[in-house]
Image (cartoon, rainbow, N blue to C red; front, top):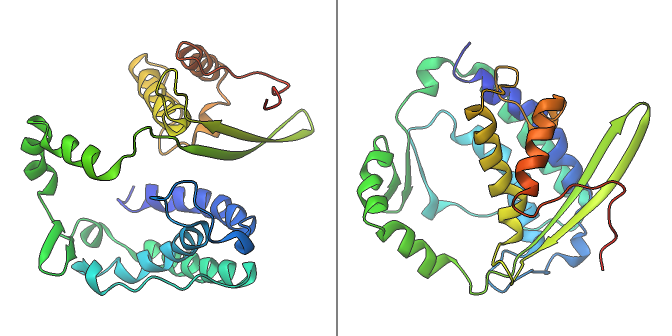
Length: 242
Protein backbone atom coordinates (compact mmCIF):
# COMPACT_ATOMS: atom_id res chain seq x y z
CA UNK A 1 0.00 0.00 0.00
CA UNK A 2 1.37 3.42 -0.92
CA UNK A 3 1.67 6.22 1.64
CA UNK A 4 -1.02 8.23 -0.14
CA UNK A 5 -3.58 5.42 -0.42
CA UNK A 6 -5.07 5.66 3.12
CA UNK A 7 -5.37 9.45 2.72
CA UNK A 8 -7.00 8.99 -0.68
CA UNK A 9 -9.53 6.51 0.75
CA UNK A 10 -10.42 8.81 3.62
CA UNK A 11 -10.76 11.80 1.29
CA UNK A 12 -13.13 9.82 -0.94
CA UNK A 13 -15.26 8.99 2.13
CA UNK A 14 -15.24 12.44 3.71
CA UNK A 15 -15.63 14.68 0.64
CA UNK A 16 -19.32 13.78 0.03
CA UNK A 17 -20.08 14.36 3.72
CA UNK A 18 -18.36 17.75 3.67
CA UNK A 19 -20.29 18.70 0.55
CA UNK A 20 -23.61 17.88 2.24
CA UNK A 21 -22.63 20.12 5.15
CA UNK A 22 -21.76 22.98 2.79
CA UNK A 23 -25.10 22.55 1.01
CA UNK A 24 -26.84 23.42 4.27
CA UNK A 25 -24.83 26.53 5.21
CA UNK A 26 -27.25 29.50 5.45
CA UNK A 27 -25.09 32.12 3.72
CA UNK A 28 -27.70 34.78 4.47
CA UNK A 29 -26.48 34.41 8.07
CA UNK A 30 -22.82 34.44 7.09
CA UNK A 31 -21.87 37.05 9.72
CA UNK A 32 -23.03 34.86 12.62
CA UNK A 33 -20.40 33.94 15.23
CA UNK A 34 -20.96 31.66 18.25
CA UNK A 35 -18.31 33.70 20.10
CA UNK A 36 -16.48 36.99 19.36
CA UNK A 37 -13.23 35.05 18.90
CA UNK A 38 -14.84 32.59 16.48
CA UNK A 39 -14.60 32.79 12.70
CA UNK A 40 -17.84 34.00 11.10
CA UNK A 41 -19.98 31.26 9.58
CA UNK A 42 -19.62 32.49 5.99
CA UNK A 43 -15.84 32.84 6.27
CA UNK A 44 -15.54 29.37 7.79
CA UNK A 45 -17.66 27.86 5.00
CA UNK A 46 -15.53 29.64 2.40
CA UNK A 47 -12.33 28.34 3.99
CA UNK A 48 -13.71 24.78 4.12
CA UNK A 49 -14.85 24.90 0.50
CA UNK A 50 -11.43 26.14 -0.62
CA UNK A 51 -9.34 23.72 1.46
CA UNK A 52 -9.22 20.85 -1.09
CA UNK A 53 -8.09 23.22 -3.84
CA UNK A 54 -5.43 24.66 -1.54
CA UNK A 55 -4.19 21.13 -0.81
CA UNK A 56 -4.03 20.30 -4.52
CA UNK A 57 -1.90 23.38 -5.26
CA UNK A 58 0.53 22.74 -2.40
CA UNK A 59 0.92 18.98 -2.61
CA UNK A 60 4.02 19.07 -4.80
CA UNK A 61 5.84 22.16 -3.51
CA UNK A 62 8.63 22.30 -0.92
CA UNK A 63 7.02 24.95 1.30
CA UNK A 64 4.01 27.18 1.81
CA UNK A 65 4.22 30.81 2.92
CA UNK A 66 1.02 31.76 4.75
CA UNK A 67 1.90 35.47 4.69
CA UNK A 68 1.18 35.50 0.94
CA UNK A 69 -2.07 33.60 1.24
CA UNK A 70 -5.25 35.45 0.28
CA UNK A 71 -8.46 33.94 1.67
CA UNK A 72 -11.32 33.35 -0.74
CA UNK A 73 -14.15 35.84 -0.71
CA UNK A 74 -17.35 34.63 0.93
CA UNK A 75 -19.61 33.53 -1.96
CA UNK A 76 -23.02 35.07 -2.37
CA UNK A 77 -24.79 31.81 -3.18
CA UNK A 78 -24.63 28.14 -2.24
CA UNK A 79 -24.05 27.29 -5.91
CA UNK A 80 -20.80 29.31 -5.89
CA UNK A 81 -19.71 27.73 -2.61
CA UNK A 82 -20.31 24.20 -3.92
CA UNK A 83 -18.63 24.95 -7.25
CA UNK A 84 -15.47 26.01 -5.39
CA UNK A 85 -15.53 22.83 -3.32
CA UNK A 86 -16.24 20.54 -6.27
CA UNK A 87 -13.41 21.97 -8.35
CA UNK A 88 -10.97 21.74 -5.44
CA UNK A 89 -12.01 18.22 -4.45
CA UNK A 90 -11.62 17.01 -8.04
CA UNK A 91 -8.15 18.57 -8.26
CA UNK A 92 -7.09 17.15 -4.86
CA UNK A 93 -8.20 13.63 -5.83
CA UNK A 94 -6.27 13.86 -9.10
CA UNK A 95 -3.10 14.99 -7.30
CA UNK A 96 -3.41 12.32 -4.60
CA UNK A 97 -3.73 9.62 -7.25
CA UNK A 98 -0.48 10.85 -8.83
CA UNK A 99 1.41 11.12 -5.51
CA UNK A 100 4.07 8.42 -5.15
CA UNK A 101 5.94 7.49 -1.95
CA UNK A 102 8.90 9.70 -2.85
CA UNK A 103 6.68 12.75 -3.16
CA UNK A 104 4.65 11.85 -0.07
CA UNK A 105 7.77 11.61 2.11
CA UNK A 106 9.56 14.68 0.71
CA UNK A 107 10.44 17.47 3.23
CA UNK A 108 7.82 20.23 3.45
CA UNK A 109 7.86 23.50 5.41
CA UNK A 110 5.06 25.77 6.58
CA UNK A 111 6.23 29.38 6.75
CA UNK A 112 4.91 32.78 7.78
CA UNK A 113 7.17 35.23 6.02
CA UNK A 114 10.61 34.87 7.57
CA UNK A 115 9.29 32.55 10.30
CA UNK A 116 9.20 28.82 9.65
CA UNK A 117 6.29 27.32 11.60
CA UNK A 118 6.66 23.66 10.61
CA UNK A 119 9.57 21.81 9.09
CA UNK A 120 11.06 18.29 9.03
CA UNK A 121 11.93 17.57 12.68
CA UNK A 122 9.35 20.06 13.98
CA UNK A 123 7.76 17.54 16.38
CA UNK A 124 11.08 16.73 18.06
CA UNK A 125 11.88 20.42 18.46
CA UNK A 126 8.53 21.13 20.12
CA UNK A 127 8.77 18.26 22.63
CA UNK A 128 10.88 20.23 25.19
CA UNK A 129 8.30 23.04 25.13
CA UNK A 130 5.53 20.52 25.81
CA UNK A 131 7.58 18.85 28.58
CA UNK A 132 8.16 22.08 30.55
CA UNK A 133 4.54 23.22 30.13
CA UNK A 134 5.29 26.41 28.18
CA UNK A 135 3.59 25.18 25.01
CA UNK A 136 0.29 24.40 26.74
CA UNK A 137 0.49 27.55 28.87
CA UNK A 138 0.93 29.78 25.81
CA UNK A 139 -1.97 28.12 23.97
CA UNK A 140 -4.23 28.58 26.99
CA UNK A 141 -3.26 32.22 27.44
CA UNK A 142 -3.72 33.23 23.81
CA UNK A 143 -6.30 30.87 22.33
CA UNK A 144 -8.91 30.10 24.99
CA UNK A 145 -11.85 31.88 26.58
CA UNK A 146 -13.00 31.58 30.19
CA UNK A 147 -15.55 30.16 30.50
CA UNK A 148 -15.19 28.15 27.25
CA UNK A 149 -18.90 28.46 26.40
CA UNK A 150 -18.86 26.61 23.10
CA UNK A 151 -21.63 25.13 20.97
CA UNK A 152 -21.60 21.99 18.78
CA UNK A 153 -24.32 21.09 16.28
CA UNK A 154 -24.22 17.75 14.43
CA UNK A 155 -26.64 16.35 11.87
CA UNK A 156 -26.73 12.56 12.30
CA UNK A 157 -28.24 10.24 9.70
CA UNK A 158 -28.56 6.50 10.17
CA UNK A 159 -30.32 3.58 8.54
CA UNK A 160 -31.24 0.06 9.62
CA UNK A 161 -33.74 -2.60 8.54
CA UNK A 162 -34.98 -0.43 5.70
CA UNK A 163 -35.59 2.56 7.99
CA UNK A 164 -33.86 5.93 7.81
CA UNK A 165 -33.72 8.49 10.59
CA UNK A 166 -32.22 11.94 10.93
CA UNK A 167 -31.40 13.60 14.24
CA UNK A 168 -29.89 17.01 15.00
CA UNK A 169 -27.57 16.83 18.00
CA UNK A 170 -27.01 20.09 19.90
CA UNK A 171 -24.53 20.26 22.76
CA UNK A 172 -23.34 23.20 24.87
CA UNK A 173 -20.67 23.92 27.45
CA UNK A 174 -21.56 22.49 30.88
CA UNK A 175 -20.64 24.98 33.63
CA UNK A 176 -21.15 22.34 36.34
CA UNK A 177 -18.39 20.04 35.04
CA UNK A 178 -16.58 22.66 32.90
CA UNK A 179 -16.62 20.14 30.06
CA UNK A 180 -16.92 21.78 26.66
CA UNK A 181 -19.29 20.50 24.01
CA UNK A 182 -16.28 19.84 21.78
CA UNK A 183 -14.78 17.64 24.52
CA UNK A 184 -17.87 15.46 24.69
CA UNK A 185 -18.39 15.14 20.95
CA UNK A 186 -14.77 14.71 19.83
CA UNK A 187 -12.17 14.37 22.60
CA UNK A 188 -14.05 11.78 24.65
CA UNK A 189 -14.91 9.79 21.54
CA UNK A 190 -11.28 9.84 20.41
CA UNK A 191 -10.18 8.69 23.85
CA UNK A 192 -12.64 5.79 23.81
CA UNK A 193 -11.40 4.86 20.33
CA UNK A 194 -7.87 4.55 21.75
CA UNK A 195 -9.21 2.50 24.69
CA UNK A 196 -10.99 0.24 22.19
CA UNK A 197 -7.70 -0.57 20.47
CA UNK A 198 -5.92 -1.02 23.81
CA UNK A 199 -8.62 -3.51 24.85
CA UNK A 200 -7.92 -5.60 21.74
CA UNK A 201 -11.27 -4.90 20.04
CA UNK A 202 -9.64 -4.04 16.74
CA UNK A 203 -11.86 -2.96 13.82
CA UNK A 204 -11.01 -3.81 10.22
CA UNK A 205 -7.53 -2.69 9.07
CA UNK A 206 -7.04 0.77 7.61
CA UNK A 207 -8.64 4.16 8.24
CA UNK A 208 -12.11 3.55 9.64
CA UNK A 209 -14.67 6.30 10.33
CA UNK A 210 -16.62 5.79 13.55
CA UNK A 211 -19.83 4.97 11.69
CA UNK A 212 -18.08 1.90 10.28
CA UNK A 213 -16.53 0.93 13.61
CA UNK A 214 -19.99 1.14 15.18
CA UNK A 215 -21.26 -1.66 12.94
CA UNK A 216 -19.37 -4.05 15.22
CA UNK A 217 -21.80 -4.70 18.10
CA UNK A 218 -18.96 -5.22 20.58
CA UNK A 219 -17.34 -1.94 19.57
CA UNK A 220 -20.67 -0.08 19.74
CA UNK A 221 -21.36 -1.44 23.23
CA UNK A 222 -17.84 -0.48 24.30
CA UNK A 223 -18.35 3.11 23.13
CA UNK A 224 -21.74 3.39 24.85
CA UNK A 225 -20.38 2.06 28.14
CA UNK A 226 -17.27 4.25 28.23
CA UNK A 227 -19.09 7.41 27.15
CA UNK A 228 -21.86 6.80 29.70
CA UNK A 229 -19.19 6.68 32.41
CA UNK A 230 -18.42 10.30 31.51
CA UNK A 231 -22.06 11.37 31.46
CA UNK A 232 -22.61 11.03 27.70
CA UNK A 233 -25.64 8.76 27.24
CA UNK A 234 -27.08 7.61 23.91
CA UNK A 235 -30.84 7.13 23.94
CA UNK A 236 -33.57 6.36 21.41
CA UNK A 237 -35.89 8.02 20.75
CA UNK A 238 -33.80 11.17 21.35
CA UNK A 239 -34.78 13.39 24.25
CA UNK A 240 -36.11 16.79 23.04
CA UNK A 241 -34.00 19.79 24.01
CA UNK A 242 -35.40 21.68 27.00
